[in-house]
Length: 153
Figure (cartoon, rainbow, N blue to C red):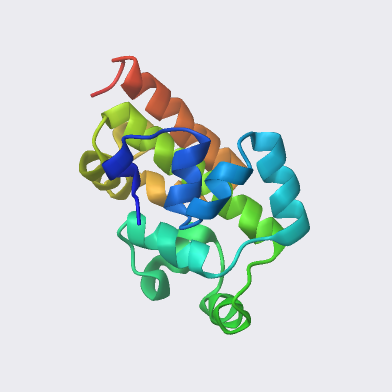
């Protein structure tokens, strides 16, 4: 299976790869198409395991903090092998931010380390733990933009 690091891809193709959905990267090439797909079909549970693996987090230990889902909810989704539409959309947005981190640092390992460490620009909170809601993801994206353009190191 191809990975973001292997292909040096960024953008929508990389997001599908982070979610373990390589087959979708060829079919849904715009964010609008992706949105329509997610709202109609959701995602399989393996998308969450693929993303948590790429982010190097233990889903059972950190899933609630990162994805905002209780452990019992995660267990139910695993049994059903399906994420609800809203959860799929949230997961997709987190994958977009992870891709932006890889792009900003131009190195997947550095990006994943940065996501897990407290960041002064984020009031010493780990970016990973802010991404479970829209406001937190927006704050992380703002800092990533500043890093990419040399305002933070």
